[in-house]
Image (cartoon, rainbow, N blue to C red; front, side, top):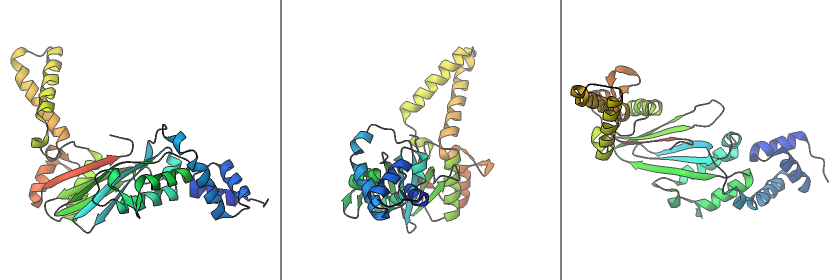
Length: 272
């Protein structure tokens, strides 16, 4: 049996996210050979894949990749702990997967170097000893596609990402609007996209609330419409006050630039 140093154990732990004891045992069993220890952990980890299926993967990162200025993909990949989320092996996995995901709008469509995504994920989960999953992915193609990734903590990889499609190329504006969406997440681009049943429900809630508050019957219609308008201002991108200049709406900023937002996607780790 070879002597295993603390430095060797630390190196293996940082690469794999495995526990200190597991790393020490792997190195002992592998006579101190790093590559063999990696393989030992992988084999051991594969045996535990089924056991991890029911565990929650609520940490992770958001990754993105652009293909020129007209194509882009945004992806959320999850793990169980923030320790693994910032692990170089996990981050490299995310970069590999998002690099293979261009054009995909579901995890089932992703193939990595000829292998099904689940095989790649299972291998990584075995090595990192955690449940790993690609939660969602979206791809855009249009006149101009931009992306913005945001770190909520300097110690972690990006936790929020926005993919945005514009009607014309404008990199600075795309970044500004994507940052706005990151900070003040809307649900829709325009009022026309809001489902009629959702608007009806908001009116119903607004009326019931006003009645509960004892508002006069004669004022109910005006109060309800005011509150529905408030709903639109909170949830419709072009009607929101622009984060960088609250005196203007996002719609006004876009109008002045002669550009429109076609669509956007916003992913935040662990959030619907």
